[in-house]
Amino acid sequence: MIDVTLESVSKRFPRAGDTAAVDDVDLRIAAGEFFTLLGPSGCGKTTTLRMVAGFYFPSSGRIRFGAEDVTNRPPNKRDTGMVFQNYALFPHLSVAQNVAYGLKIRKVGRADAKRRVDEALGEVHLAGYGDRRIDQLSGGQQQRVALARALVIRPRTLLLDEPLSNLDAKLREETRVEIRRIQKDSGTTALYVTHDQAEAMAMSDRIAVMESGRVRQVGTPQEIYHRPATAFVARFIGRSNVLSVPVVTAGPDTVTVALPGGREVPVAAPADHGLHEGGTAQVSVRPEHITLGAATDEDAITGRVTELEFTGMATNLLVDVGGGEPVQVTAIDVPARIAVGDQVGLRLPAERMWVVAA
Ligand code: ADP
Ligand code: MG
Image (cartoon, rainbow, N blue to C red; front, side, top):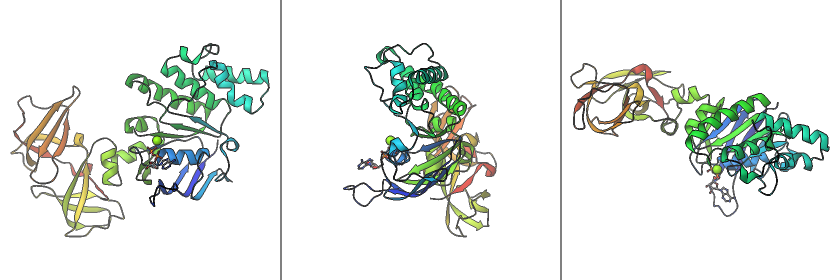
């Protein structure tokens, strides 16, 4: 097991202008950790992963595996296992030949190689599939062959770039559990790339949320969900309201703001919030933490329902509170009589609100 460190890593592509695809990224991935780069398309996830793999070299910064500087080392000198979105399997070779590929290159002896291939196929629950052709396998099985091929060389790091995006929704959910189990069993440090926040939350020990080539926040799924650092992170992870509200007083870790309708509430804020009286704070609150009541309720913000969508498990509402974006509310129990156009009261619990950076 080995930790992976990125120190001020940037990547600029020639002919791509001045903007960096990856901009001054610092990360430390602990040994054995399942670590995910999460962000929208084009934010620099694949470029970061490819620099760890050695397919790209950074324009500046260092990459280390443990104490070893691997920044400018080619991929075959890094001991990384890579799983791609399209699996990149050899269609004309059998399952066992595909898995054995990395061993052959490393000149592992025939008997040893066979034992390790069998072991790797067992690990991904494909024991007995060695003689099949790749095109005789389902998408999910091909995905597991790709994983076995990456793991059979006992890599120091396992790198996965959107490996589930070609699977249908149900298989994707099953396979994400499998990948995590296999990674934990093997003890390999894993760097995983996805744009799917639910996938990232379900699989990861920690997540780095990226936007425009930069890391905006690193934390456990719980930290990122409950304490998003920026408005972007709040909106990208799950759904969130981000209200722009006037600051009444500002303390070191609490800021009192005036909610729509005028009620003043103390809201937790990070130490470096930089807000002061008379300024405007961005406050995040999750739709499921808002409760819905009558417009006449004391302490409630009144508004008018503009959209109402029943999803089975819950009902999603949009409520116009007069100015700013409509407030999103998710409620398990909504009185059946509530309809679009109705006046309702919203309760925003202060302990569920959090000041975010703009
Ligand atoms: P993601 O994987 O998050 O979707 P990428 O790392 O693939 O994002 O891309 C980040 C940015 O770098 C994008 O703007 C993309 O167009 C650019 N980019 C990626 N690879 C190259 C390349 N080989 N040459 C020029 N620009 C690139
Ligand atoms: Mg990508």
